[in-house]
Amino acid sequence: MALDDNFFERVYQVVRQVPYGRVTSYGAIAKYIGAARSARMVGWAMNASHTMDDVPAHRVVNRLGLLTGKHHFQGTNLMQQLLESEGVMVTDNKITNFKKHYWDPNEELKR
Image (cartoon, rainbow, N blue to C red; front, side, top):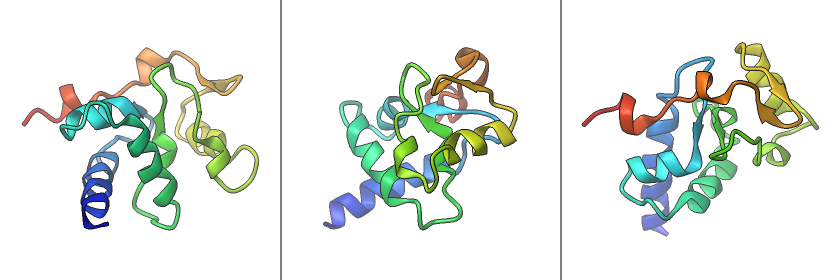
């Protein structure tokens, strides 16, 4: 399980850098950490992060801007409420004006 723990921690390091009011995708994180085909595993890491106050999992959505992880948050609309409190509007479980809010770690965190 050490491999998974290391993978999860690399995911968390990226998610902690997503700016307030911005969102990124599972796939973009996977690509950035060198595991381009592991978007689903990034999702598992996000599911496991809900006990960590310093991992803003609500800022991670699917590649189309859909709140696919919302059912892992407490309450029915907590993910949406957290995003909207940061100025990110959501309509029908999808980020409104997704391109405006999208933050790509592959562009923003040049190595």
